[in-house]
Image (tube, rainbow, N blue to C red; front, side, top):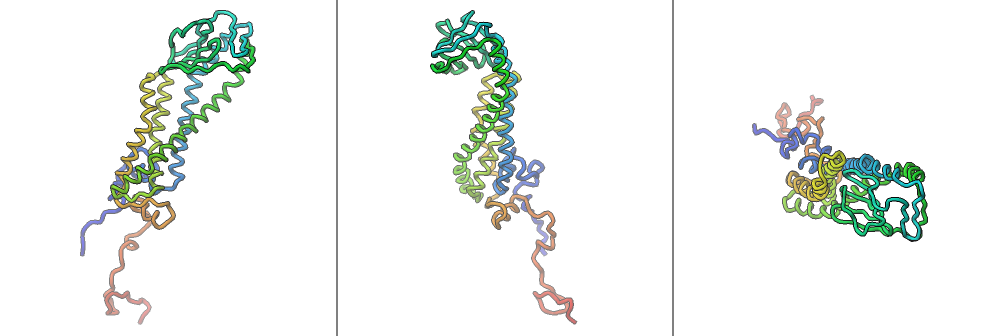
Length: 322
């Protein structure tokens, strides 16, 4: 009798380790991300939606806590006499060059009579010039000429009332836009990295399909997106300066690529990644450690010949035979 201990599929591919027991429910390790190759699409989609939603929520929080108070203070700085914006020219009564409101992350300045900018006092600065509006930052500035068709007249009361009416709808729109932008980035990375992930799996003999490679790439975008959301919160709380914030955002594609490589390497050799519900998909899920936990040992072992009273080897005896 063969006494060699048998290794289960879960033990063979490393899913018996404590950090991999969640299977296709945690996209934080190579084995966990690789498990999404044979998992239903809604699982990876749920994680992507969650990470994109948190990215949009973190952006909305940053705007609400760091930018919106600056805009509200700038509205309070409007003069009592109306500010005229006509024919593409801003006519500001009073001091023509001053800081309307400032904070470490955002500031609003008035430069109607200054020949040049007096410098940047915040990470991002909005400057109101006579013929244009400038958004200046670390890499320079972008100028937007005042539209010639605009004909506005605002005093302090109108500015405060207008900002109070629009600040929440604008915040909601920008937060949703940030989540949609994060989803677009995830889909773009999946479109670019699916073929390299499939080729790497083919070279390593992992047997991953194109659909499985796409799910692996999408799952690999979750952790970088969550890191970007955490960086946004840390930036808003003044925990990290802008250079580290930019590094965290720019490293998102690189981190996704590294996680894709890690996940494909961790896939078991020859494991298929077909869609669940098909014979290939059920075989792949067993290889990734999703075997039926209610199966019995007798049901999984081949039948042995019966050498009982029937006297015929290789045939089971009939219990109802006299």
